[in-house]
Image 1 (cartoon, rainbow, N blue to C red):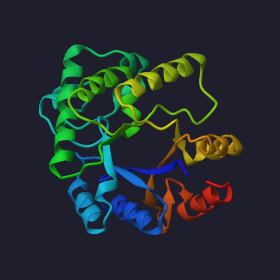
Image 2: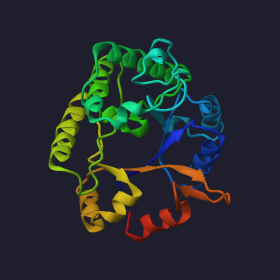
Image 3: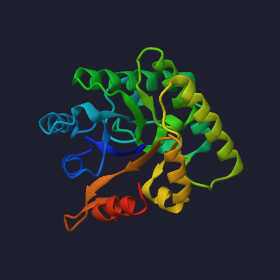
Length: 250
C-alpha cells in the first residue's frame, strides 16, 4: 500500500516522544518528523536509536514554537516575542503568509539551515521535510525552502493539504500552484496529503482507487496521551483510528 502514516512533533516534549515510540512499537505509524529546536529533541533522537527507527525520522521545520537555534531571528517581532521565542503571530495575517521583507527571509533561511544542520549532525538520514503548522506552505518560507533545496538533497517534501474538498477558490488555486512547485524542488512527493479526519471525510473508495493506481497518500498524525493516559491522535483514540484505517481497507 502507498499509505504513509507520519507522526508530527517528535521532540516536542517527553510525553510526545513516548507516545510516538509506542506508536512505532504497535505499528500505528510508518515514520515521524523531528522538531530539532525543542527541549525534547535530543531525547527523541536517543529513543529513535534505542528503538531501531532512527532511519524513519525526518525533519519538522519549525518557525512557530520554542526557542530558535539562531540568535538574529530572536529580535524579529514578526517571528518572535520579547523573550526571543517563536510566537506564530505572522500566521494570523494573510499578508505575511504571502510576503515578508528580505531581512526576515534571510533570518528564516539562517534558522532553517541551522535546524537542518543539527538534524544531520545527529546522524539522521531520511531527509523527508515537512513543517510545524505547515509554515513551509507559506510563500515566504517556500522561497527559503527553494533556496535550501539547492544546498541539501531532500528525499521528499510534504505537499500542501489536498486530501479534502473545501476551501475558497483562491486557496485551492494557491494549493495547486504550490504543489506543482514543490514537485519541481523534489522529485519525490506523495500525491495526496491530509489528516486522518480529512481521510475519513474524503471518499474512501476514491482513496483506495488512488492507491490501486500507484499513488501515495500521506496521513499526518499527532500521537499524544490524554489526561487519562490513553494514547490518542490529538483528540481521537489511536487504537480506534488504526482500526478505522484497517476497516476501510487502508
